[in-house]
Length: 414
Image (cartoon, helix red, strand yellow):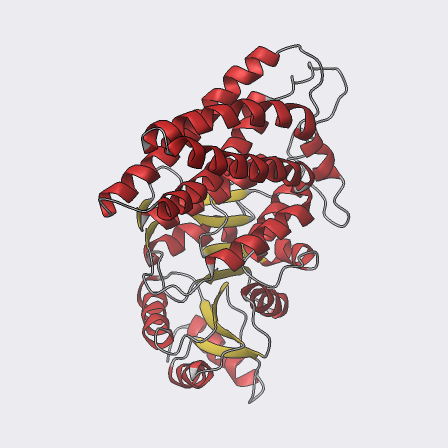
């Protein structure tokens, strides 16, 4: 006869109905996919093997097919029939945000996670991602490629775009998390429900929106440095995604000042290009680039000082111009590096190629300058303690209806 505990377990099983609903799991991992028939099978099998052999918590993999037109759904159904930890859900409309919101809203798991189908993030980061959520130490966890300890393998173009995007978030929305775009995140289900009801974006900006809402609500965000390898076959439309991200930033309240700054930046970029073409006939490319930047830098700082940041009068004008020139130094380095790269690739590039490369590098430098302008060049003096003046960020946090800030033991809102 077995032990009393085993007999009790058997007795309990005998009392259950013949057909029982699926047991709740601790972690549900959603893999949103669209037209991924080639990568879906190998990636899900690899994830399933990891969960079976090395993951100490109960888990479920949910393949969320959102609008696939190839054989992805057939592959998903086959995997769900073959692997015991896998299920498949299909949505007719595309959109990663739409898929995650749909599956997470209906989940019975304690922790809701997701990862990209290419498994660019090393799976060894999964346990450090979800453990603080299950223990109650944190509310949200994100993988980050931009924190100390992360090891990232990707091309310079994606590296620059990622860093500029996160810098833009810090400058416009005053966020504190380091990496909004890494496709490796988790959240406690009880914390997710009120946030999911407030998210609107159906696509790639969903991650950023959820994190901004979580931070404004005072939730504790845990960051895990990850080992990450770029997917060379990524089919993300960077231009469309960037425009959608800018619209999302505007919707979340970071757009008024940004729109004015971008307007000034576009005008100065056009002036820079025209001036460069005029000067290029009389001097070398590097000299024409430096002089064009210097002239437009002074004008850019002066216009942004008054029009974008609302600074009036002559007080600190010289200091602002000096700092503005230092900010433009970053633009000079970026555009000079782009020009040097072009001349490395082609011994005698045409004027059109020079203009295209320089204009693109200058637009990237514009994002960097906006961040520097806001957090350094034109930064307003902080109100002294006890003045009773709240910061805009604090006012925004407390103004979110339906989401209460978490209260620390000393009674202050986090």
